[in-house]
Length: 68
Image (cartoon, rainbow, N blue to C red):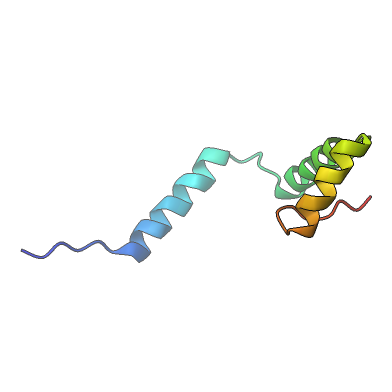
């Protein structure tokens, strides 16, 4: 007996469930603005030690550079 899963249908079902879960008030542009504001707050006012770690993480490609 062969086991078969239609991955295309499963992906369509998964996407439909995600859209249903986020609801009709979901605003991707507002979400992105909120993420950018959180990123700005996270990396503003770093002390010298924190700034050195931040610079190392950016240089290593772990996080993108913050641009105000």
